[in-house]
Length: 231
Image 1 (cartoon, rainbow, N blue to C red):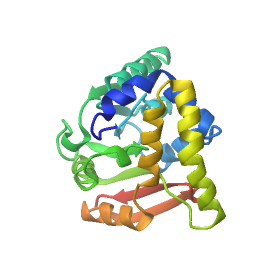
Image 2 (image 1 turned 90 degrees about the horizontal axis):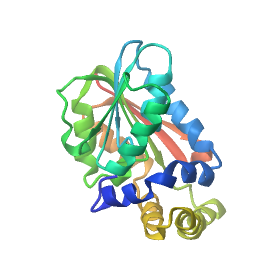
Image 3 (image 1 turned 60 degrees about the horizontal axis):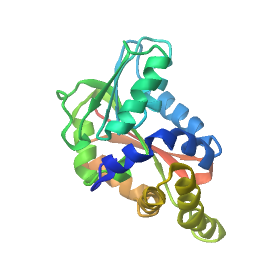
């Protein structure tokens, strides 16, 4: 949520953001986030950073699990953070989750502070992918994992054509109808369609010094969970 004026744009659509995520994905996004949390393997009592946390779904997911984990969520959109804080308050998780208005490219944390760093559907919104991944790797403890959840266009053919129709027509129309900002959902569609391939994400993770790369296909390959480990 960090390219150009995207913090303001995401603040504008924050009230309907969660609803549209669930509707447009047929609730599959909940399963993807659950897998992201599981694959991060944060130890009991550990500390995790959720970058581009938005309305804090992933941060809340970590805090709600047994094991006493401590969670920080960072984002540049004040509107998203405000809605996230309201959700945290309702779930009585204030003592376990701290939300911070911060640029992922300049995280306000010491090096080697976190047992895991996660980012769900936020990497594609960073103005500098390489710098963002390097900064998230910096704050990881040795042995910790960077876990990235992102969309990935399917291979060519009928599936790719259907995917492109969904991105160009369905997503902006439904998103605009519900949120009142078709332009925001046009941006989201283009950010998905223009994002990196699996091999390019691998190169990013490797350039940050992370090893043991994994790419786990989700729902037939329309999304992936990427994992890199700091050794």
